[in-house]
Length: 581
Ligand code: 9MR
Image (tube, rainbow, N blue to C red; front, side):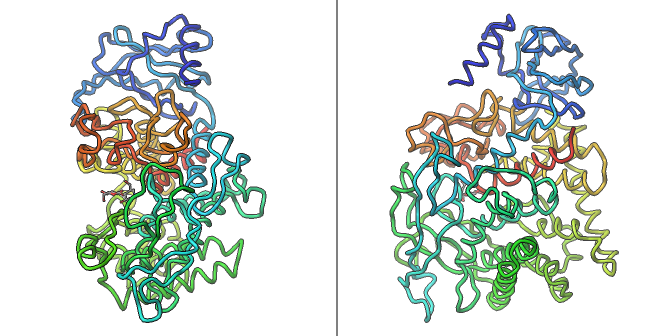
């Protein structure tokens, strides 16, 4: 409400009147770096030109010619590109084109996305289980009581062993809530935790001084690592101490209603140990051991032990797939929460083996990983179900430590660069909206925005390897996509952008009696699958891939939030921040 009022005042003081804002002029609603690429899209242009208007001085700051790029297949819109990369004067602007109207305002400045990045990381603080969020850290309106102590969790029949029979009580506190729901899932924690650890590992100097205003701020560990620790410490408790296997999830039998965490008191279970969860756990623990070594050696050692123990279990149990429908048929209670099921765990084996290789230097792990085999065709965009590329990233980053493996390490690097190059070329020379998002039709899926974010992350890694500026421009294009240059003109991060999403499927935001949503949460994004169609009773207005979105709490398939979606956009934002002026 307040933000809208400020914007209206800007426009009126600029002599424009609110009416001229048009959803057909789409830009990154946060901003651009003075030295970076700057592109907006005008849909159905009525004149050949565009202009930038300085919101404060009311002056026309820049004029340019639109370029018709054709109809974007994902939104069926005729796209005209407004490229104002040349313009680099700091200030607050709107992009306009005669006959259409003006965009929401954006800034050109150094550190253009710093506040956004902090907001994206602070999301994890808001997702913490088992701890009060006092005003000092959560802010007045989002302060809340602790939810889910999780110190009395029951072993589900599917996870029963001789030493831990059904209904054994274990303690498994902390961790982040997965998403809009209050359950905690190891598989999804795997990629989320990796992505944030990688962000630190790739930019340690940057994060050594970044303050996130969390309870641990001011201790000797960087804030980002303290936040991640909240989840890693939970993950450790999910390992069965008797055999090394890792429970697939800690969950209610059914999803909660729209209630606050402290009011959600249903019985919680740890459910079936699975190969995928155990390997994802092994990978994250191996990675944690090398990253936390500097700050807490005994803890790091225990992470490595846990990783090795888990890996051994997985080798003995290579095909314990979590399959919720089948499992439900066998056990009581039925468990109906997120499945995170995966029929193929080859990529999980590879990822765990690679992280263990880098953590220990033992060549047997590298042999297990069989990297050469996947180099031929087996790497792709990472997702919770597809994780070997996370291992590829790790190898690419550490490649110079292994001169004896130079040949394969060069191939690893080349593979990363060639995958990213496809996104770069698509963004810069094929996509009518000038974005990497949509290179593959399957990008528009459940959590589509995380595909855009993961593409941006891959592009930033290729930039770091090659130093080629076009990778950085393509990475920025996907950030622009997420912040407004897209099929709906929404900035998909709550509280960031004039027209940002306001009604996420996120229980605390639904139940806290606060009008604004918890800030810094990336929406899942447009999803033509519309799996929540029934729940949303006719609210979708389009089936077009880039428009199949509703900013409504009913929409768990297009407007939920999740830890594995915020992580790659946080990576993308901070990788840009660390590089751009
Ligand atoms: O992100 C998951 C998506 O890839 C799946 O298609 C979908 C349906 O199985 O589940 C998504 O994950 C949800 C999880 O199962 C439960 N917590 C919320 C997650 C985000 O919607």
